[in-house]
Length: 405
Image 1 (tube, rainbow, N blue to C red):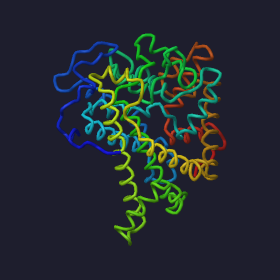
Image 2: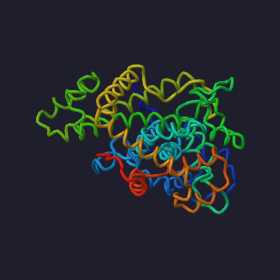
Image 3: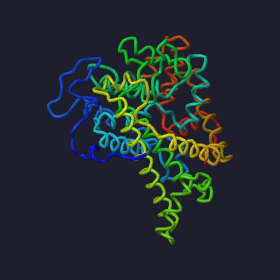
Image 4: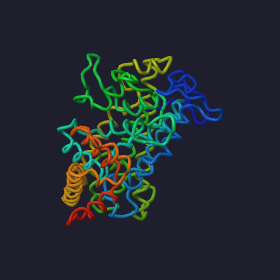
């Protein structure tokens, strides 16, 4: 996909007419005085970084459970990489970089310990009570569960940041009010009754670049971590023509490169090609739609910042490779089963005896609740755990804890 370099915003600070304007934000649920030194979106980003939820990401799994080694990505390092790519895309397209970065930094707040395994396990035990959705959990964290400020629960983020968090992957409701990906998670439905996030429209371009940055980041770093683990080999990467081409380019330029440097040269080229593809597609779509405001972006009826058809096919091929070679590898499946058991056991223990949850907040608030509300509180508590904490408390409560190595 070709790029018009004449209109790229390389650090100029100038915003496009379709960018989100922090000085014209729709505001916060609880009104606050504006800052003398920061825009509204800068304040959002800073609040996100200073949360307990953000710090916990350093001990939550991306793919490889933390005991496997210190050099694998965690949710935190993944989040930082997504934010870097999102900010680069936002700058190139002359969007608000702070909003794009903020959405990227908050997008994984609701993830459980043990990656998608933990989410699946929590969803299973919470099915009788509405299930579990990490995006809805992220919203609960920033609107309710973080208890830092004197005047409100949560972070009191701007409407635009909350919209980006909830809708970065697209509308959640059809124009007819039906869920686009199944039933709408109840926490999102409940919040929108008091603060409407317009779930049937697309999100801002800043949120869209954060979403596609997530794909770019994990496609790349899961390959890197897979190579490091030995579950992937360079020969396996030849299954994807795009990756085979990148390796050929690196070998031609550096015929005697050591494996670790060779892998890095592949990854940096992969990110560059994907970022350039998104910029080119975004420019093409913007030229067709000609939005004159952020509202026009929301009303466009389609995603603007995305992959070309060719790169989307490559994205699908990479995901297929990762799924078959890593995510469903017998060693990973064994670890996933153990991680699921840990969370299932803990859920049962806390439902039977809430006093085992040591936090004063959780114990005080769970007394007298009905079963469904109690289950949701237990789910909140478990979702907030890090991998290391979940393993440790399981060892304290049960005679045998699965070995996740």
